[in-house]
Amino acid sequence: MSLNPRLVKESFSVVEPVAERAAAYFYGRLFAQSPHLRGMFPPAMDITRDRLFGSLTRIVWMLDSPDSLGGYLGQLGRDHRKYGVVAEHYTAVGNALLATIKRFAAEIWNAEIEAAWVAAYTAAADAMIGAADADAGKNPAWWLAEVVDHDRRAPDITVVTLRPAQRMDFVPGQYVNVQVARWPRVWRTYSIANAPRADNTITLHVRTLPGGWVSTALAQHTKVGDQILLGPPVGTMAPPDGERDILCVAGGTGLAPLKAVVEQVISSGRRPNISMIVGARRAAELYDLPDLRRMESGFPWLSVLPVVSQEESYTGMKGHLDEVVPRINAWTGHEVYVCGPASMVNATVRRLLDSGVPLASIHRDAIQGEP
Ligand SMILES: NC(=O)C1=CN([C@@H]2O[C@H](COP(=O)(O)OP(=O)(O)OC[C@H]3O[C@@H](n4cnc5c(N)ncnc54)[C@H](O)[C@@H]3O)[C@@H](O)[C@H]2O)C=CC1
Image 1 (cartoon, rainbow, N blue to C red):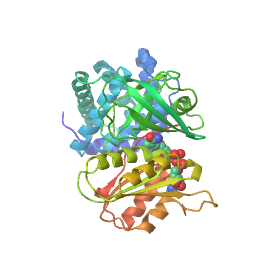
Image 2 (spheres, helix red, strand yellow; image 1 turned 90 degrees about the vertical axis):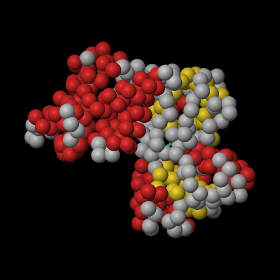
Image 3 (cartoon, rainbow, N blue to C red; image 1 turned 45 degrees about the vertical axis):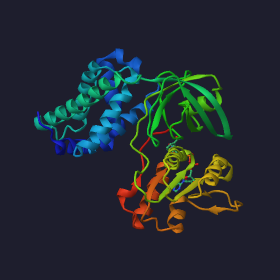
Image 4 (cartoon, rainbow, N blue to C red; image 1 turned 180 degrees about the horizontal axis):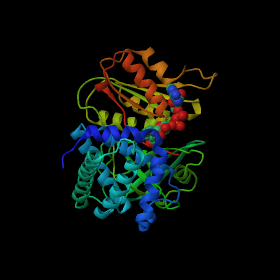
C-alpha cells in the first residue's frame, strides 16, 4: 500500500466545506457500530466534533511533510492515552472515517481514492499507536494535579497554579488538556504560563467564557486543595535557540505561553532584547502586568508595552495589536511569537509578513480554547 497524498487532499477538499455535517455523520456511524465507545466521549459533542476536523485537516495538509506530520501524530497518540484509547479503537474509528469520506466525496470516489485513504489512515494510526506505546513506559497517561494557588485577577480572568503528583516535563510554549471533576471526559486546553520550576508546579491563565464548562469550573468552583486532571504537554511552539532579538505579541490570556517562553530565555543566561507587547480590551484586563513589570526590572533587556483597545480614557498606548505592532518597529531581524484570539493572531501575522518579517521567523501555535 503506497501513500498518495494528492488523492487524499483532493477528496478531503470536497468534504471540508461540509465539515460540520461530515463530523456529525462520522460520530453517528462510529457510535452505531461501536456503542460501547460512546462512554469515552463527553455528553456534549460539539467541541469534540470541531477538534476531530481540526486534527484531520492538519493531518491531511501535512501529508507531504513527513517530519512535521510524524511529530504531530506522535503528540496526538500520546495525548490520546488520557482517553483510554487502545489499538483496537483505531479500527472502529478508521472504518467510520472511511465511510464518512466516501459518503461526502461520493461524486469523485473510486477504488484508487479508497486505497489512498486506507494507506494514509493505516500509517497515521500506526504512528499514533507506536508513540503511545513508547510513552507508556515513561509517562503516565494523565497527571493528577493539586490546586496550590487560585488567584482571581479580573472579574473573568483567574490564574491557577497546580502541582502535578508526578514529574511533568514540558517545553515552554506547550499546552495541556485539563479536566475538572465536575465535568468528566470534557477536556480543554490551556497553555503552561511558566518555564519549568524546581517544585514541578505549573500556572494556567483562565479566561471564563460564557458557557465555558471547564473555564467556569476552574474559576468559580475550584479552590486550593482540589484535584484536577492534566493530559500530557503538547504543542510545537518553543523558545528560540539563537541569539536574535525577540518580539512577543500577546492578546488577552494568549500571554500565557509567551510568558513561559520569555522566562525560559531569561533563565538560559542569554541576553537578547525582548519586546513584549501585551494587548487587552480594557486596562483592568491587563491581569499580569505587575508580574511582567517585576520581570522587566530584573532583566534590563526586557521591555513590556501594554496596549488597550476598547477604553477611550486609557492614558497609555491604545489600539488593536495588528495595527500597533508594525508602527512600533520593523521587527525584520526578530524572532516573533504571536498568541491570542485567532482573529488577532491572523491579522497580526498578516501585517508582520506585509512589513517584511519572514514567515520562518514567526512562531504561533494553533490551540483550541473554549468554548
Ligand atoms: N489561556 C490560554 O492559555 C491561552 C489562550 N489562547 C487564546 O487566546 C485568546 C485569549 O482571549 P481573550 O483573553 O478573551 O482576549 P481578548 O478577546 O480580550 O483580546 C485580547 C487582545 O486581542 C485584541 N484583539 C481581539 N480581536 C482582535 C482582532 N480581530 N484584531 C486585532 N486585535 C484583536 C484585543 O484588542 C486585545 O488587545 C483565546 O482565543 C484563547 O483561545 C491562546 C493560547 C493560550
